[in-house]
Length: 113
Length: 113
Image (cartoon, rainbow over all chains, first blue to last red; front, side, top):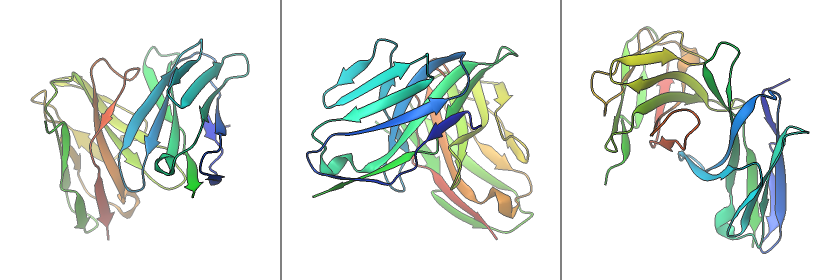
């Protein structure tokens, strides 16, 4: 099983719709969770951190479910500019005491006019 | 405000040649990272550095060498390039480590023929 798994998509969603995707992680000791956004042929950029209680930033809502070991990203009122690949990122402390950061392969989202 | 820059942006080299990819950041972040991104894989950590003269292996360090004599620079050297090292390489920096927001450079597209 991969350490971090994402549905690769593509998700093709009409403008204005709500879209959600999940990311599952295998290590129950995972500590930090992030969503990054990556535009085509560009570098990843942090979209938002994911906190235990869930958090919202404008049209974006991130949630963490530790019991089921997944994080989710919800985008409301989607805009054309939301078209991108969304990367799930998980950080944990290994048994050897070193930190590890694992990136998912990304979920591709296309917003259709 | 340059942020984090990488050079060259594109490079074609032959198998067996030594190649150095440069990374420079202007934020005085303590941590710097090198990743490679390939289709079907998430970003994979090659090496990282917690401070000048402190480096550590990531997930896929074989065939790569790093150094960090100054806080702002973190060059990555492929000692004898192989075709399997054809990839997009991203440098990143962060203030406090793997569990912190990372700022990525624009990437270097390397092709080994």
